[in-house]
Image 1 (cartoon, rainbow, N blue to C red):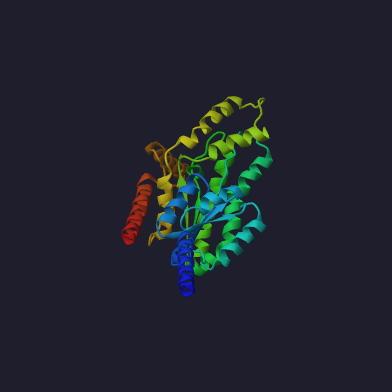
Image 2: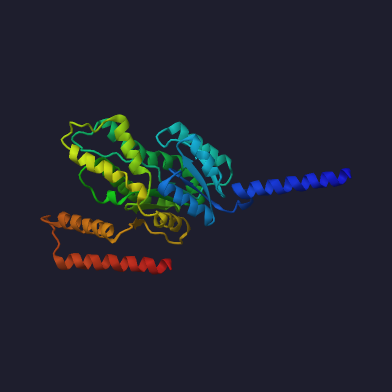
Length: 326
């Protein structure tokens, strides 16, 4: 009887251990690990859900401790709390991930904020905050986790925006940060090639997220955009539009771009993802407009025939890469 009790106890412990391991990924140690910052809501949450359901183990980077429980409740997900603005917390996150023994195949720099307002009136502290999260954040996190990514010959992606191509009134600070991500991605990509690491940028249009509400809260809490502003009318209209962001299209296409980056044999450098043809049209047309502005009047100005020839060459190059990917 005593022997039977021991057998039953051991069996129970075995089942409990395997249930725990399956939930937290211990029984699936073959899964490649990906860290997603800003994973508790919006685009980051959708990325975490899709990656964890499609063969990856996700370290879900969250800012607040009370966000960890929900992330830890997901299969193949472990929450990691840190602020991308704080180097000590970033370093502690590296130690935590490294101590898990899984290595790290992928990094998705998704944590971001939006600061809106007229550049002539915007307090420098707000611009610093914008850049600290959206630019220096990916810079810190990528530097810190780079040795692990290099060891696995993995992949790095950063969430940019079509605002990294477009720019408009009242969006200057946010657009500056996303333009910086475009340059950062290009430079980092060329530097990481020697290590067998690929670098990518995801450029979403307008999708459902909490970034609009957070931007409104920042304005309300800090009062940086005052009633005596020369741009009060623009502010009042923007506040209303920002409340609608959370009601936007589901960001599943953005998450699928992240998934493709991590699992495709030949992922693209850039993933522009928009919910409407209008956003796609405006973004591509702006690039064409910039090209023409760049060419206009320069000493070696190219004529229409040469520009079309260049375009055809790039299309052929892209078609060749797409064929190789298939």
